[in-house]
Image (cartoon, rainbow, N blue to C red):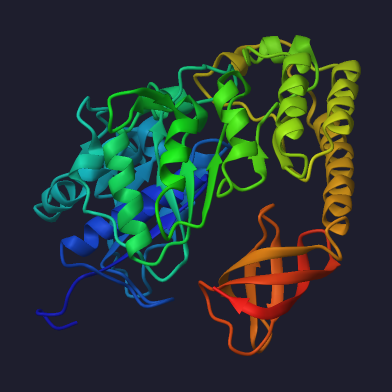
Length: 445
């Protein structure tokens, strides 16, 4: 490579949508430093592994990825490990993998350019601070990109301390970004062509702040303010905690047209005994009452959730209770996992760890029920007319894929369509994971 060629980079993000957002912000920051994205499949001068620590053996997977970065000629890129594994493992990463040049936690990645500069001088650059000052103020201004959808982190950290979860230890305490900063970032995204924004947070509905008139507001107030922005067509939010589903937020689902009819509200288990052991601080009854209230204001809403099977001490009766809450809720989609020990969490040392074979059997039974519900929800949309935001190209000639208001992937083929268009469609077919549709060509937005 010529000496005057710009340095190239690749950011590889794992895990949650907040990591996707963080990865995009790191890419923007590197771009502001003169780096350019590496060609698809090509070598990069700098590789950032933006890691997730939510699953068992996450750290081992990171070390495996690091090993694969060595090139055939024996050289390697500058390697930075960021994200939650970096925060949890710390200097151990640099000790176990000497090829790693930079280790940076999720609350300090705004310092990445300085850390890279230190690494280029031969230092092992490690920054695991959780600074009081906001990292967001040090990041470049947002701009729209090639996609019509974007993530916007509004809240970070968690004060809930679920006994199975590492987030409070890797992301820190709950903080809410200032209202004015969020409005400014959203406006910049919309000016760049973004039509749908998903608000993100570890507990996104815990966001609070003061609006431009100094009034205390919650997430519903932020959503209402964003809904007044011209050019922004759709608003979503994730991930929520049942304890933070306020009256105002529930009401917003029935009153704010731009707020899509989709709610991801994890319950994790259907047994009050297990929920208490998880420190979830809600009950089966309180959860179901929230769902009932949301459906009362928005009858067509799609409900999504998260489930953990095999939590320590979970009996057959506890698992049957989880199946019961699934049947009572009737999910449009859901995520389900086997319990995974996370070092440093209270659940990791609890008695009555559930046998792996039992967890596997329970997970298969739960997923069979959830898949049946998802297929039924998708099938119920066949024949319905709805609005589609086209987001990407499909595998077939002339095919585009968009998201329905209920977050379903929908395939449509028609001349004259482009990514970013909003078009009325009629749903014509339903599979377990996607829908087919035909356009109603009277209007393309």
